[in-house]
Length: 222
Ligand SMILES: [Zn+2]
Image 1 (cartoon, protein in one colour):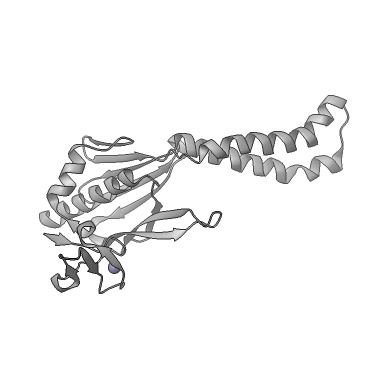
Image 2 (cartoon, protein in one colour):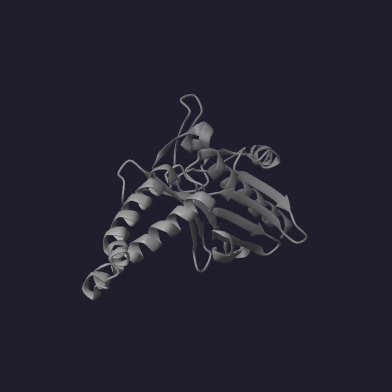
């Protein structure tokens, strides 16, 4: 049975774990965790991989294993009405009235440019919240992660041989104090791979389990 700190990904030595109280203190980062949450057995990962939770997928392609997760977010329920109200209101007030009156106002039109840019940003975010996905294409040498919408995905490539540690970094969101962001970090890779994970716990665990599992497989092969 192997145990890893879920906060920083370090291996936990037996003396760091107290089974009776179900607590484990990480010697690396000092944080306390539920001992049961630190267990990473191959079987655990394999079970998750055999039955990917809703919103995730795993498929074998000719030369790669593809694991993916939808980045659809419940925040869309708030974000989309907000975009419609904010963009609709400001653009109507600035440009709509000019069109209706058939008179061009240069100052007002220039004044509206930040609102146009804001609208583009809000719409891009809305599309990501509805259709965003993250896919990892894992092959013998490493993997490529795609994050985004269709052809507009950003992607990063990494090699298994550079990878030293896989862990989640949690931080408070800048916009909302109560919101927590989960960032997956592949340490040792260059440029360093850092991607935001879904808020949904099952989906997040699926990605992490799958990556650790295939990394282990690679270590065994070499
Ligand atoms: Zn730790």
